[in-house]
Image (spheres, rainbow, N blue to C red):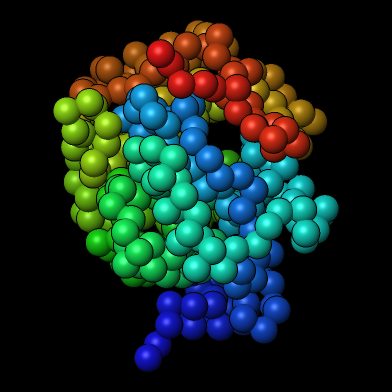
Length: 313
Ligand code: SF4
């Protein structure tokens, strides 16, 4: 019988379509083979309220990424990881990953939150299936940068309950310059349409915790408000009731510290201009951040607990 991991033999799991044989040690852009390095797994309270709830989201942060964002706040695990090489993070087989999901369920997580899964879809899908057979009942959240392949998403229809993608760019030049992915606008817009088709609008339980549906994140970049407007115009065309999380937390990280135009934090005026634009467009479900929270959102994967967030009482 064909295994999901067979897809790694000629990998087109994401829009990069590298066509390398990851099962024989070849590496594509993401630099990840068959066993999956996990940078952090644990309860996380810094996601949107329907994801974190009051008990925390059961996050699994995969190391590596299929994007190369110059400002990535997780660059320690998404890109530097590649330079620092291999045994920095433990590698998980499909069975190990399933066990990790069940551990998070035992810890009381509201959901299993797969963070940056776009380059490990076959492994994550096989792990969800194995965990379901072993008693996993929690909703599964697919928390991606939005650079997802349609085929990969179609292959996980029914396995994912909540999609939580970014929509970073609707500007090809910007996507090429800042994330080395000039096809990002087409890829992400197709991906988000597919996600919405699979799970629809957000449904929550009696405590306001997500059971199913779509939440889209957009990080407002300094000096790039036209790009933000185009992203929001695309999204409102899907539905004004799509849940949109407008993120203000941009601060120059990683290579962005040396790049003109994005080497400064987002200003309060810029963020307000985009939140006003979203309201004028008619978005009915907006998550808005305080600008003072910029530093709170910066993880440090050198610490045992990378996040500053704690459960609210
Ligand atoms: S997941 Fe994407 S980046 Fe990684 S090898 Fe496959 S096609 Fe390439």
